[in-house]
Length: 204
Ligand code: MLT
Image (tube, rainbow, N blue to C red; front, side):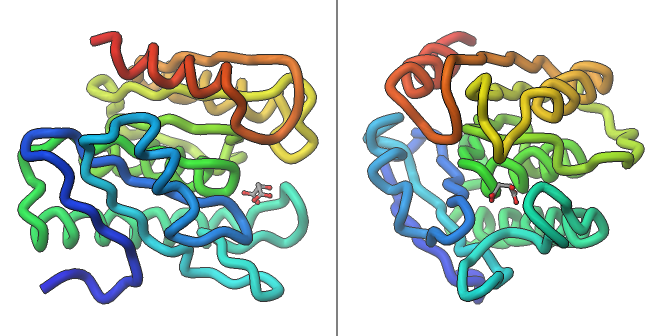
């Protein structure tokens, strides 16, 4: 049976990749269906709903304040997302298909946390406006099979560049191939981010 965790699923063409779409704070599982289509119209779309509520807004883990994460909750929720991915892949028969996590903002942060802690679950990720989800936490996973693209604005108050650079460094230290593309501007996904994502996906 499909996982009980609320989610949206589109089968896509056989053998196409599976795009795991992770919305930002205040969004929901329907937000990035259009983004998935512009990235790869034939792909399967797997889009869970953020399980945490903050003043009625859905997100992926708790925070004490803007930019101050409850890191224990990040770790727990990353484990739960990894379990959801395994369950969904089994239920929908996606085991042989390449899964690429694509997240924005808080969704980028849970994608990064899961990629750092559970590379068997997420080994390809595109993080739009993401930052380091595991500050002051030791990461000891082997990420030598992982590829991650970080896309940031140079003046993003919600995803400070130093924090984004830190997670790129941690990924690289653990052996991941991490690419960081920084553009002028703030929080969001613009045309240049999308082009960089398509370039990265096209490069083997
Ligand atoms: C977070 O809480 O993950 C970041 O501050 C981004 C956001 O505002 O959701």
